[in-house]
Image (cartoon, rainbow, N blue to C red):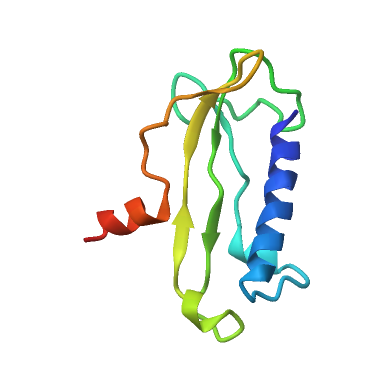
Length: 119
């Protein structure tokens, strides 16, 4: 698995989900709504691994972020209910043999919990 393959999986899932919510996903609309890569490598500092290729297979011990985000411009072409909204949910994980070790298990990610933070 590579970061680019994970990104493609996320694009496919987001496209399907956004279509179900009434978004027109023709053309380059996904790029507008999801303008950044799914994740990046994490080293001693958050962004200190710019030379590591996203096409390289992930290896045990590497740490990455998984941070899908959707940002809906306040424009008439998008479903009214979602205009002007944005959300990014981020996890930091370490690649292991069997399954990733998730550093951010306590981070708020569920809708009800996120909405509670707004109060």
